[in-house]
Image (tube, rainbow, N blue to C red; front, side, top):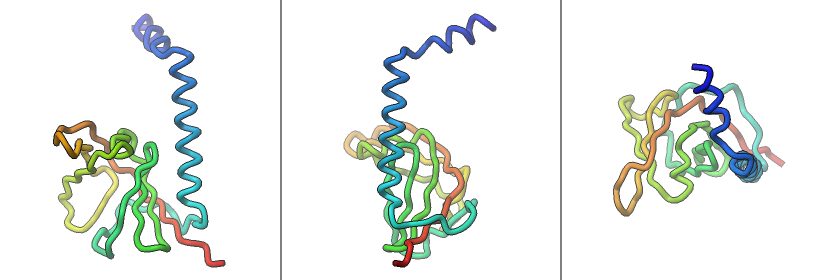
Length: 133
């Protein structure tokens, strides 16, 4: 067992770790720009009602932003949904009509070939509201 752990810890090269750190820094900067002018508006929530109005999604790294109108964003950390950044569709098997909830599984699907490229589970939804100036 110990040799396997040691082998796994050596599996990534310094170049791979540096590239991963660079990707994380880039994602953090993009997320900060996307949330510029917004402030956290309460504690993270388990579910949000997707029927409250039209919304669009943006994926930045492992974070999916659900934007309702101009003044409200819910951020959800969903590791594994990076496929949406390259244009894959997010497919949700929604068993709770009208609700998006943590723990629900999302599949990423290539829109041209219709091949599943990955999946992830939704986390908590952190609300953000536009700061009034």
